[in-house]
Image (cartoon, rainbow, N blue to C red; front, side):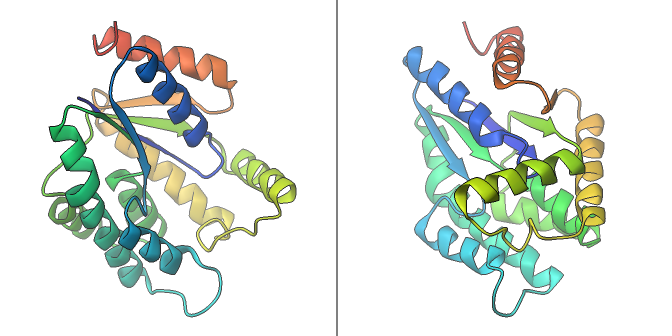
Length: 211
């Protein structure tokens, strides 16, 4: 079992890379669960709607953090930890590093408080590996606009934040990765999916997690 988290700005390709890894694991007859935050459970999905909706009253920064942590606690207790205990690989789109990046970095809440709440919500569960798909804010915005134009989907509340907010988020992700190089893998999200897939699989093979 392995717990692998994918982080990065919106539009960085987390979902696509997760899917290619999921396919690789299934081809090797490895049990795997793909999930996401906020969400991952029925209650978590309801909280996700409260956090990301662009209408109605927006949560204050502290309320926003607590909503994320509430969703995470439910997710860990009912989905992530039970699957890890059954020897599944769990692939998760965002986890605790996102709270540090968005709420400590972007919202400027004291990082120590975010870390304490992360530990409480997860009961000290940490990823075996965090994959950071690093992308410039400008390219992230371009990809989001292209996606919105194609799908007709309106940007959510977090995606609609100003560029300087997303710059702080990106900087936090990179700072976290550089502080924990043995637990993070930084990939250049501007590269093609095939190249990123090969880089990730080579890294996992180097760790002797994949044959």
